[in-house]
Amino acid sequence: INVAATVPDRRQFSRVLRTLPPATLAWLLTASVHLLQATLPADQQATFGDTIAGDTQALLAWVKENNPKQFIKAGRLDKTRQPSGDPDCKLGVKKRRNVSPEDAPPTPTTAGQPANRLQVGVDIFWGYAAGIVVTALPDGTEIVLAERTRPFNESDISYFPPLMAQVEQQLGRRPRTGIWDTAFDAHYVYDYYHQAGGQAIVPLNRGKRGGDRQFDADGQPLCAAGLGMPVRFTFQDRTSTLVPHERATHGCPLLHPTPTGQVCPIADPHWEKGGCTTTLATGAGARLRLQIDRDTAAYKQLYAQRTMVERVNSQAEALGLLRPTLRSGRAIANQASLTYVLINLRALRRVVARSASAVPPSA
Image (cartoon, rainbow, N blue to C red; front, side, top):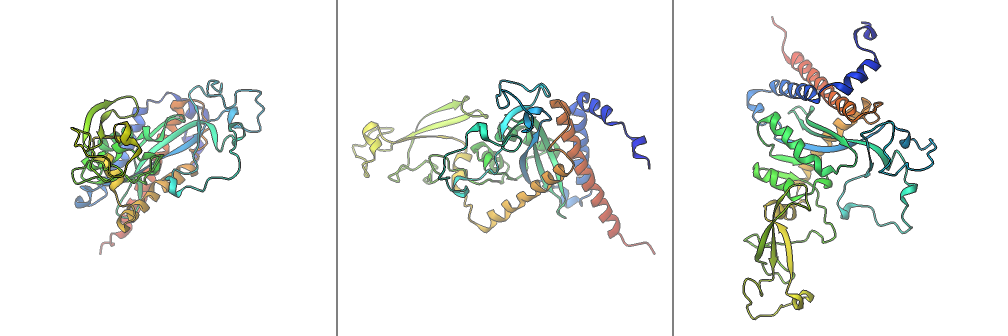
């Protein structure tokens, strides 16, 4: 077959990617997911997509600012100077790994590297990020359930709500188990899977305050003296988070709701200033993220399934997604969508071929 005679040339393909409505490709992805689901026996279709894994992947914009050999007098790493080669890309920093602090490499003993010496195109660059949610068929075949491509300056956690909304559309329900890296260690991620009757499998990011918070039988946080801290008041947080939610401020049980006349048994320094206080989200996720036992064999076995999203990312990289030679956000997002549709169609071909080979020849 003369492939060149049956497909449009590269220039025409680029024009199509710039103008094609994204909803068209979203329909193709949905159709590929439903076709793959239909290959399963009826009893397995009910649990299809119950366990998912998600991640984001950085995409390098096709601009001279990402070329370290290109001389640019000023503005290479200035986010206010938009590259002329791509009006939609944004400047961002690529993290090598999203890990919890206790698993991170030790603090270097030498001075930190200034931003102007970071490796352009490796550590910091103009571009985009593609987020995906992946599940696996019983035979281990990985398929893409949802995808989203956005400029590189958006945080990883911002991908979670829209990706999971797509997954719910595909499945008609919430998946029960979600596997993500440390960048997605947020209380509302745990809430999401808890409400579905399942569990979020996410490494703990201890942050500056650590992750050793304990709770009593009523779900109240314990102070340093081991006493349950009652709620003083609640409020709606709409400014410090991507997902507005209710938060509660807890106070010292010896002073609230009424003083008991007792003094702090450990003479905590906060006692003289009105006692200890802490503020937590009121949802179950705020407690679950600290109470999950991440050392059990069951937890580790589930987290090991995160490799399914890494294998899909490797397929996308082999198809050239990481360095798209396009110059607009819509074109790059459409190319990413087509890439994931292609990955699903390849998976469908393998599944159908295996099913055909398993059927015994007729007598």
